[in-house]
Amino acid sequence: MSGRTPTPAPGASSSRVLICDDQQLIRMGLRMVIDSQPDLTVVGEAADGDAAIASVAALEPDLVLMDVRMPGLDGLAATEHLCAQPDGPQILVVTTFDLDEYAYAALRAGASGFLVKDAPAEEILVTVRAVLRGEVMVAPSLTRRLVERFVLQAPASAAAQHNRLTALTEREREVLALVAKGLANGEIADRLFVGETTVKTHLGRVLTKLGLRDRIHAVIFAYESGLIRVGD
Picture (cartoon, rainbow, N blue to C red):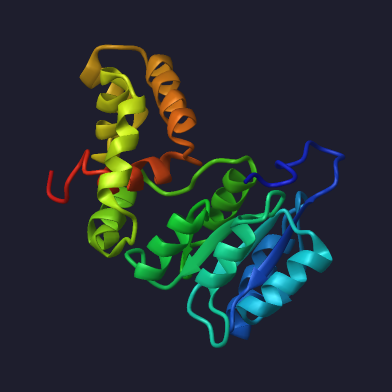
């Protein structure tokens, strides 16, 4: 899944953002931050997951800022639904705590990152624009912490996931393991005595061979397959 529109060039139409949160004050604050930018426009608001799904269908936003804990259909269920759509928007989870089981589940469902609700405006805008460019906005070390905390609750079959590792070369497994341990590309390059471009190439092949969406899902797979274990 990818967003419809990257951050536009000067003169181009602005990227469309939908805000979904059950707290009106949070929605107002996010709207003020987003609408203050010439390249971003809030096209609508929703107070629960059902309203978010309906608004996405009606408004076709490029990005949804999605709260996870809401009455009725929560943000996790809404994220799973929207990420299953072939031409759906990017999802950026907005949560109260950085280590949140709902945030982990939303990332596993296909969200492209998450924001903590009290993040400063500058951080919000950097994250929003990065996700609109197709980037994943979760620090490698934080991805590892999230996965280690919640991976034991994951329903996937470890044996079935482990069998998929046979598609990878030894070097690709090595790169995947280092990604799962929280190393950035530059750190992996130093560890393996190769160029950073080579690391990116290997990681790209890992994602393609395993049918994974992004770096976050590569980390999740590494733990679920048993390639890396909690505490490694």
